Image 1 (cartoon, rainbow, N blue to C red):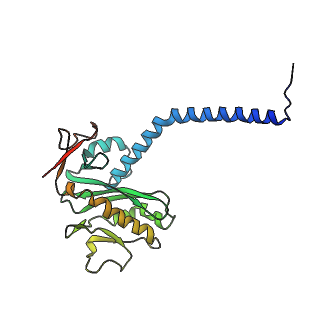
Image 2 (image 1 turned 120 degrees about the horizontal axis):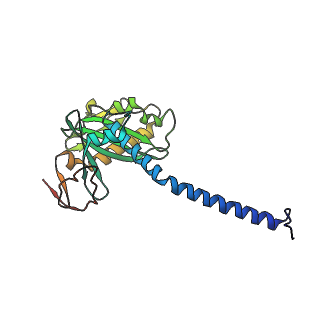
Image 3 (image 1 turned 90 degrees about the vertical axis):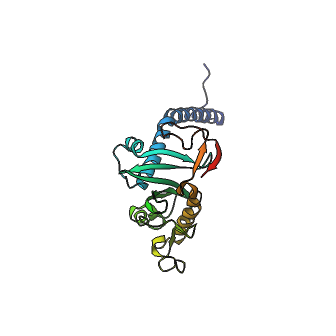
Length: 234
């Protein structure tokens, strides 16, 4: 019987190729087997973030609490939507926000009271801001500093983040929070994120609904439909 020369280049190449193929197959199999669980974990994390913006943090039953408080999904377009929620009998609107920081993306949610202009709560996180500096936007003390602040002034989004003593002249304290010390660019990113994202949802906050197919609002979070925006209604 012929024997392989285990010291030859051919043997090394064939052996390495077989190992790579087997490893690739195993990795693909594991990724496929875990995909549904990974997707569920991502969705669960998103729901946890929405709840955090409603000051419902660290819930033991995230899915149950989410179904309890989130009543409707309101679509502005096929890609932009927000949530109608109810907390302790009070109506809230939860707006998704998305922007860019120093090292990557920023995102989160802003919950607004029924008056359409007062912040009830916020949640922010980031892709890779500097630990101890920009990353502090994900800490609760920073997020809680937005509670009670106002969104609009003279018809424009005024809610902002400014270095202490650097807010625009004439802008009252109820419209801004202090930036994170030593994290100017990240704080500027949060400021821009709020102004850009919230401005998309002024119609919803003003009580204007979006007509999606035969519904003015998608019925519930448990009955998703593919939105087809037809018209805006007063």
